[in-house]
Image 1: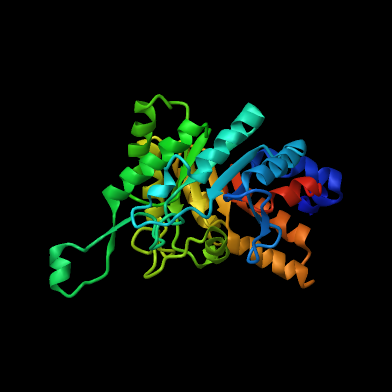
Image 2: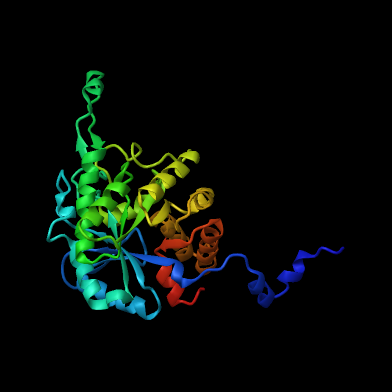
Length: 334
């Protein structure tokens, strides 16, 4: 027997030497939820270990993270006034631009700040854009439900992205899944002098049941209907490549797949199809399932988390957005 693959598995030294997939803390982006107020650090019940922060407590937590190498964050705003037109998403007093400004003044280029661009947490109806009445032909057939107007929504999202860039965001991350928003956003940023503000596109975002805990954290659940008319159908694979290629052509700098764990095949397909870095979002439902199972003693949290991170990277993800990032780095799991 000449072929013995076990020769390169016999101890940890040789296994590490020949490992095909390697993880680094430089891959991780840590999400934060920021809200108004002072001295707020409020645990999110559906996401153990994750909190709502006011800007003052956010600064302290970010500083602690920087000391261990967590230097990239994805910022979500919570607690803004909700209106039908989502105007609080880009207002002068909006929490995200305010937080970004303070973060960048405090930490400068030591911290890379990415902001979520979507209006679901800012609208009374909880959808990711502006609702309008359906076209007359649909009304004639008895259709009464409002629909998300793509082009009006893109205009709103561009205003939101610009407000974040003006505050100092290094990158914006539109998660709405409106058609054409990457090109429009790129143009809006460039026209206003923000040619160096990057765009990380949620190019492949599925209408998934894995988002449940996040919707509690961000207070962003739709009040009626669902998001299947704009987020992607989990049954489709070819369509994901089309979406990724469109966003690459429109000027995205990073392409994202969301969720991650149930879509490893999609991460691989997208990685093979685009020339841009590929990110995946290890979403709230995936995180909470691990945390609750570990708390019950059913699984080894460290081993499960690192197995998942390895799977994301092996599938082709260059970047991993994960709520586990602090545990991974602070507890020395790498």
